Length: 236
Image 1 (cartoon, rainbow, N blue to C red):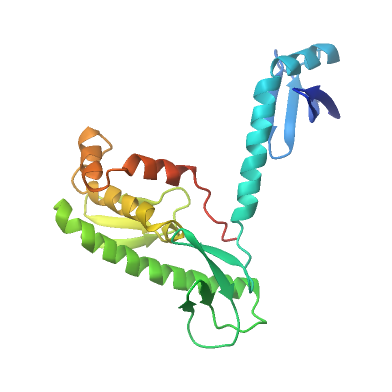
Image 2 (image 1 turned 90 degrees about the vertical axis):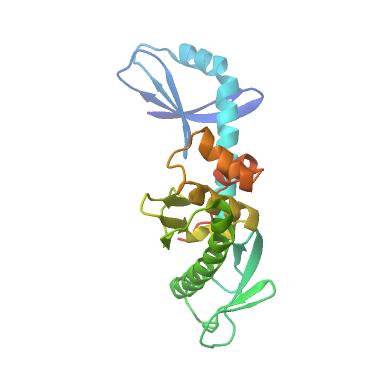
């Protein structure tokens, strides 16, 4: 294993060269950058030639990786006074400030009422409880708004913290919505609500299902793409 670099598409690209029991040269772009795995018989000239042949793919993947890491870094929430928290498509500024019983929303600021000496874990816990309470209220109102027009009657609404799903619906009539949806603008939340309510009529993603969704949210596909491409804020 060795660290090397090569000029690819006009840029100096560092890479880690690993010798492996394999028949061909492979390329991996990961968190640590570019890794080249090559069989023992491959000369350095052969490896560099393969890198040049794949230079377009490699530089594109490295660029995409850098952009994603920048977006993920920006998505990390600072759990301190002055930290920013995405809220309904905008941003709230966290304020610890003076102590009082419950968080209070004042314009674009969320006053948590824990005092300036509160630690990050306590701030996060208080904000999460407030966030979930707001989510339950907002979701209940939107379900009540859309359900009658769609001809459905959910049996139960529950919050979920699922890592990879924004919502779900069961054949028993239970709707589950991820409380972190409150980060996104209201139109995106409405799309997810309608999506799950539509499952109470069609428990699939077939043409009839999308006809139902589109009848209520005409731009559902654009909203779906927006949600799928978004990076959720990091609550850790």
